[in-house]
Amino acid sequence: MRRLLWLPLGLAVLGAGLLCAETAQVPKRTVWIVPHDYQGTLCVQSGDVIELWTWPLPLVPDNLESRFRASKEGRGVELVGETLPHKEGTMQRLYFFKAFEPGPATLKVELVHMDGAVRETRTYQVEVAPPPSQE
Amino acid sequence: MSRLRRTRRTTLTLIALLVLVGLAATIASAAILARVRAPAAKLIMAGIPEKVIALPPARLAQVKDGKQVANIQQLQQNYFVRNNVPFIRGAPGEEFELISLEKMAYNPTQTEITRATRVLPKILSHMAYINGGTLLAIPQVVDHRPDQTSVKNQNNRGTCVCFASMAGLEVAYGGGSLDLSEQFANYLYMTAESRGCKDAGLKTTDSANYLANDGVCVETICPYQNDKYNFPSYCNNAAPAAPPMRVEAVSKRPYKIKSYQKIWRNDSLTTDTGIWINNPRYLESLLRAGHDIVFGTHVAGWITPYTGTIDVKLTGGGNPLPSVGGHAMLVVGYDRNQEYFIVKNSWGTSKGQAGYVYLSYDYIRTYAKYGYVITDVEPILLTMIRPMLRAVPMIRPSR
Image (cartoon, rainbow over all chains, first blue to last red):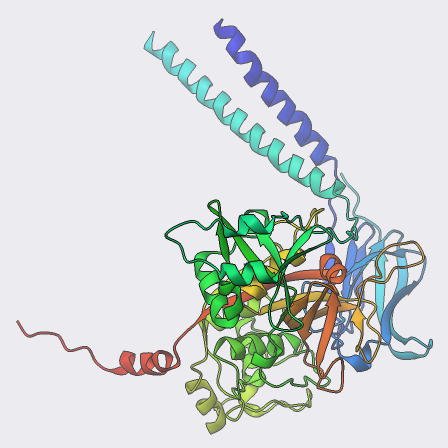
């Protein structure tokens, strides 16, 4: 009877261990939070994520005809998503780039008017290094 | 023997510890996995009519003893049913929908009903008690615009939260000609967030916390600066010596929130129920209770000059237009027939309806983020006297 009591406990430990093993397989990554006025070269490793904040354009009638647009030059970096900060008063956006391959890249954020005219452009230099060898 | 027992106890402790660690890891990893897999889809909900009970006029005469009763004669004379929904006529052009408190999306407290009677005296006269249940006459239109202070203009600065929160605080202090300083509010918020004097936006609900911790002064002491690149020196946290104007602004700030109630969004809402910002019925009930709602919302599909009702617009794929950013405003009324909220904006009187915009119920369901109502404010005299009292040395009785 006593031995039977150990069974659920043992199963719980085993289950937890398996789940831990699954979580441990999730690759670790570094997220670089980059403010809009950053001017240096971003040195990242492949697998890292760059969270690029645009400038805080006020949300007022004069700006409602404009939109932010993000792009990249270079093979090693891809735009993987965007979101809005939990703030009111601005049209600020957060763009997420992921570094894949070693090499140089350029991130570009543009403020584009409805008619297609570009109001403002800012670029950010990135250097992607290979991931450290795991020994 | 005792050694064996000790060994057994140690083993048991170790196993128990392992189980605990294992369970913690299970919960943590489950949470991580759930977060990764959570769908981010958003739905537009169709307008769901509130259920009402249709009562024959004869039953309206059944009044429960010992409670304040409605004017039954008036109820019977002005009672009518349209589309199986009971209504009461008020003044010419006024109609009130009758709804049981039990069927409402949100039950106002007795304090709120009492407060509502101050703002809308007609509600009490149309309230009846039937078989122990309460019927509340719901006004089809609530419009607090006459109670508001003047519409302001934030110009080209991202200070909408300052304007929405000051508009809410002004009306909580009685409105009229009271003009509180948005410039000082911005200074207060940015200082609290250690951000200097930048216009980088603010989470709307955080302004309630800051206004409950610290008061603001009136506009004349600290006037608004239209030019975001030319902040006055008294609004510079790094200023080596505070100029006289800043000292005056900091010392005279008696306008402060005493209590507030925050309202959050529920993304999984499928019917108009619960105390959520995306439940129009709840917002209606707050407005009926005499509150105005400071709220933050996504902006999408707004077309200048914003005079018509702003509704949800869809992309080619049938989804709501994506947000271009967040904006804060003050909800001051509603129209149940036309299904829109009346919202005080801060873009001057030339935009919208003399500075107010109408947001459809579906817009609120889709884009409203969060908000709060100011339930009480600090008495002005008390906030002025308190610092003085602190400065007075305490006199202790001599032994």
